[in-house]
Image 1 (cartoon, rainbow, N blue to C red):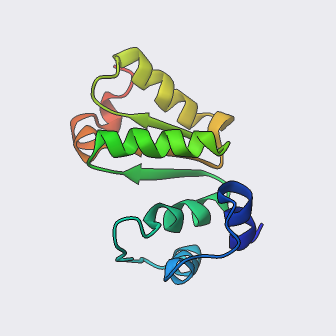
Image 2 (cartoon, rainbow, N blue to C red):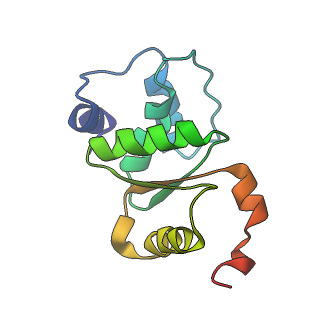
Length: 128
């Protein structure tokens, strides 16, 4: 699918706004990309669309749990697989989420983590 087809299928928009297209194409071409956009400018679409254009898992690091939960809910409402791992989850919930990521159950999907969580729980501690 093209980026515009993904935008139309999941968000219902016919075209990108502002510099979204340039950011998406830069990411899609494998470039490290910094996109500065105002609040409400559609920043999330700039990483979600190119992630959906290729197979695999998109790892999103975000500092805010509320934003993380909102992003996951919005993606799921669009029929896109997404999950989050954050403080307040039980150890069992975290393990199930990570095991789902390791399986093929959530290809073409998103996992949202907090930076602090990554630092606190390393791969070496997984499953212990």
